Amino acid sequence: MMVSATALHIGPLMLPWQMVLLLTGLVLVYGAGRYFRHKQQWPEPSWRIFSDSLWTSFWVGLIAARLFFVLMHADLYLATPLDIIKIQDKGFHFYGGLIAGIGWFLWKNRSLANLPKAILIALFVAIQLCLNWGIQSVLPQQNQYPDLQFQNLQQQQVPLQHWVGKPTVINLWASWCPPCHREMPVLHQAQQDYPDIHFVMLNQGETTDTVQDYLRQHRFNFQHVLFDPQGDMATQMNMYGLPSTLFFNAQGQLVHRHMGELTQPMLRRYINDLSAPSSK
Image 1: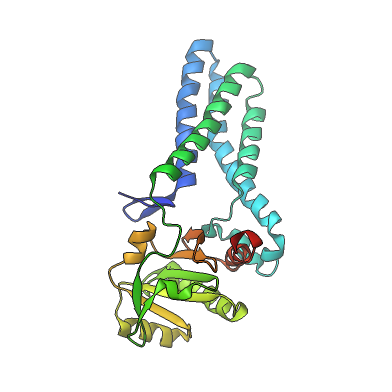
Image 2: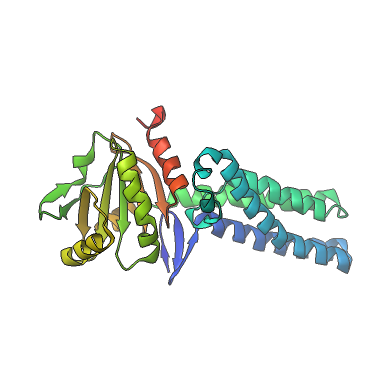
């Protein structure tokens, strides 16, 4: 098991922290519900409705969170509507989903007394807020370029501070990684669409020949390709798992981090934030 800034890694399984928090909250609310069931003598039909509503609330909230996010960024998704169903880009509106899930839970359990429902909802929300704060406080996070340098295709050492002065997107990838391969065309197109942004492809643990063969085979002409044979960037940024993408503003400050496959709308959203006045 490994812990990173964005996810809990259990073998090949990667669970984003928000998913871990949601599941933890549901399990604890289920346990608290069992307590109220015995204390207030809930009838069996009410208990079954309560139990079922927890998991249906999770799915209602998940779907609503995705729909809220897509609607808020409709201009980005209209150009590539198939990306709407690519939930691996992690485009979810947390609070929209939370409100929808709680609303569904309240409606399904309308026959129960108000006090236990209020306590259960307060418990769930408190778990989300407190654990999220705890995770962000405890886990180490690098918020600027680390003091690292990497070799490029011309065998020259390039320090990360070289990119200060322009917004920069650094993608950690490998040729054997299927989601890395799927997002490559998105990043390659973005390099052409956003000439004022550096796109740095930081390969993880592969040889120069392997990378050159891969880029040549798939006709990817990236301007900046670097090599990280020991995974130093992942260690410094606490980002384990591929692909991972880091978004730095012109001052070298980290604005966003994304673990997993990027879709075109999600990438554009991050890039728009890089251009926002607050990130300059």
